[in-house]
Length: 98
Image (cartoon, rainbow, N blue to C red; front, side, top):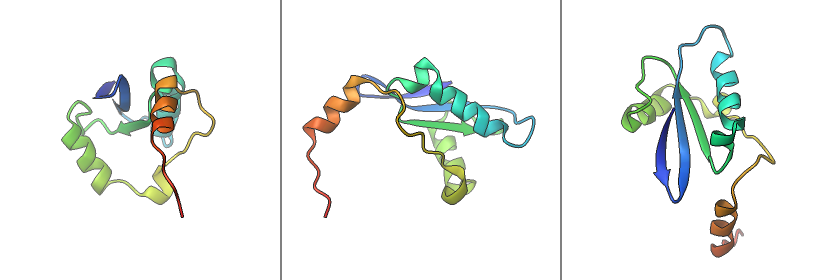
């Protein structure tokens, strides 16, 4: 697991796996996002193949830009556990949507 520092916590978690069967990356993603380290204040969880170095943010962003289909490859997890830090950040920012 590799994290990117943002505020007081890791907001972007990156995992590198060798997929053993179809759907393996999605299962790994959900497990990583649900465990304490991933769920508490984690905003983004990214799983990449073993040919991408998850420790290099440039390679992860390149893989997301070239191998990623947003219609299929995004899973939103609703009503998940989050930290109080995130709640305070959004309370300070007032955004009006028209």
